Length: 415
Image 1 (cartoon, helix red, strand yellow):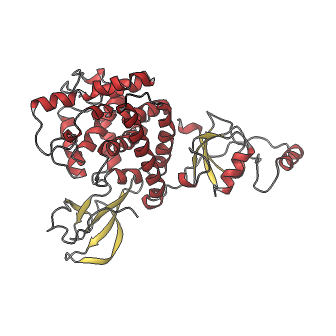
Image 2 (cartoon, rainbow, N blue to C red; image 1 turned 135 degrees about the vertical axis):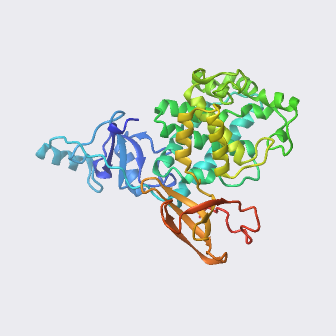
Image 3 (cartoon, helix red, strand yellow; image 1 turned 90 degrees about the horizontal axis):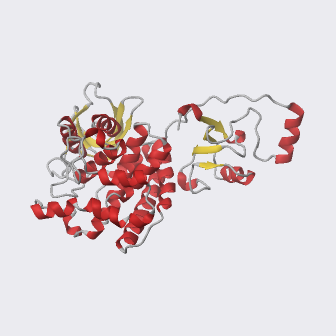
């Protein structure tokens, strides 16, 4: 969606025929299934008013443009507005587009958690249907993409914080959720079209469908794969595509799934494609998939801390494995110290990365231990920059080390 066509308007300027793409209330408070919706009647506007909506963003390319004279005002009937308009005959004018201030991670988390629950639930249902050799309705994913994009647009770190939380079960559904969020976040950063983002989201949710027909003990195996096991795992791409044959999968989605284990240097599988032969959206999913596999131990190697996983993927990119443009967007999006990372400050304090403010170039840290190593009774939050003397981030910490975190406090917990 072009920024030229996005306009932020007050609710009283909303009228039938406009296309809404963003609201100033969390998804769970919205009267509609998705924030992306064309206003079809005055009942729609009433529903938004009752939900507490004050301002919203519309897309004038997909719907009507606003006028200075409100088409609807809370508490005034449609007839009253029509009479007033006929008396004044106002000239149309363009409302200046302004982006509402992004909510904090803490504020956005409620909506993000709702999105996460829905994505995992739908992923589980789709996998179960495919495992039973049933066709699936891929259109059920479209609203999930819309809501995920809406959350990422409000604050792109709330969902990312959920991606980094530890897992205890439902590995496939959790992995699908993580790659879904990471890939869409990257797709937005790389300015892909709404249609491409829909294809990317669907591919991300279904890319591991083939694992349903493999021994699931191979996912997260703690010992090195044998040659036979590696060959078996490599088949999950073709197995998944075969499972999806009866589901009217869009051609682009099938291609993204088919290529998500290909590598720029030709070392990937199943077809050893290189560089330009791999679709840009496949390049995005490849990075999202590889990152989540590494931080959540989904292969035969130990799980890595987020920053260490970033460093490893960066090194692999320098060697030619991943697309450099996509990797640059990914690292910029995640931050050098991703949200949920445990860190040591120059002051000796220890804390957890809670949020990155990309506009102010600061990182918000919840400080858990003071400079002497004493656990604080009441953790405090501080915004730091790498240039700040005495309190910049010095290094990453591993909270699994009891010497680093003797009381087990350096663990990100959602508010």
